[in-house]
Amino acid sequence: MLKKINTPFTEMMNIDFPIIAAPMFLVSNEELVSQASEAGGIGTFPALNYRPIEKYAEALKKIKSQTKKPIGVNIIVNKSNTRQNDDLKVALDHGVDLFITSLGSPKDVIKEAHKNGAKVFCDVTNLDHALKVQDLGADGVIAVGAGAGGHAGPISPLVLIPWLKTRMQIPIIAAGGISHGSMIAACLALGASGVSIGTRFIASKEAQVDEAYKNAIISSTPEDIVMTTRVSGTPAAVINTPYVQKLGTDLPWAFKVLKENKLTKKYMVPLIHLMGMKSLEEAAMKPTWKTVWTAGQSVGLVEEILTVQEIYKKLISEYDESVKHLSGLGLE
Ligand SMILES: Cc1cc2nc3c(=O)[nH]c(=O)nc-3n(C[C@H](O)[C@H](O)[C@H](O)COP(=O)(O)O)c2cc1C
Image (cartoon, rainbow, N blue to C red):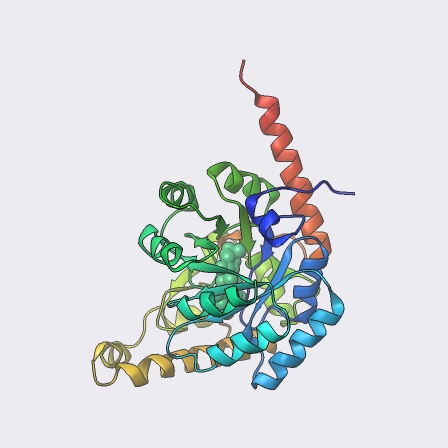
């Protein structure tokens, strides 16, 4: 039996290990979420993985039948997500314990979640945004650093976490580039109360993405990860496949002009998003040469496809070993 790791985050969520299986568009399915929670961490998924909204309610019901432990939902809180209020309500009706907000203001989510005793953690990439959400009443932040899969921040986690720590009173969860237990120990040493891991779980038995995507996670190195604005208009990390190389990593000139223009911006931003999501969906779910696969630099340490529970066990025993190693170094 593995010993618990106690942090302010595990105490707040009543879980054994401060390891979130991060919400991943197209990747986080019911089994991945419930197995992460059953492993003693906390499984989360983006509400928008399920369309239409009825499928989302069904997914929540299924997850709740597979685990009684806490689970989390990610709500994208920018204007292009027209479902956010409904998604929040459905989640609260199903007893979701944790909300992760990204890409906008979490004000309404915090207000409604707190009425139901749920906690809200907000994705941030710098101190300014972190202080804003702290003032709004967020329960914690997820510090998304350089090297992350999805919309990575520009700052090294080595700097980002201690920087946020200087002014934050709420727990900080480290995200970006974590796929080995020694990295969890490092993040806790920096002052984080937990970690949020995405890319590692793409190469899990539970993830229902195409095998070619999982194998690409195993065979890629950190040098294969490039940032592109072609997926959503905001820089996102993808594997530099021949198709990505052919497309280029910048939006075509005309798209950029229309995206910045006051009159056309409101149509272009959702359009770019929609086109990007469609290409991600095609690449993730079936064999195609149009491979746009989201992943972060932690691919470099992913060597095999394991079950979610095996991944948790491996991370925790690696964590244990590195803590022992550090204590062995001691101070004479
Ligand atoms: C395939 C993939 C899809 C993602 N989709 C989302 C998403 O829908 N919403 C979100 O807030 N973050 C999303 N992320 C970011 C993750 O929640 C998390 O911040 C990130 O994966 C952490 O970095 P890591 O991949 O290096 O572990 C995604 C990441 C990946 C790899």
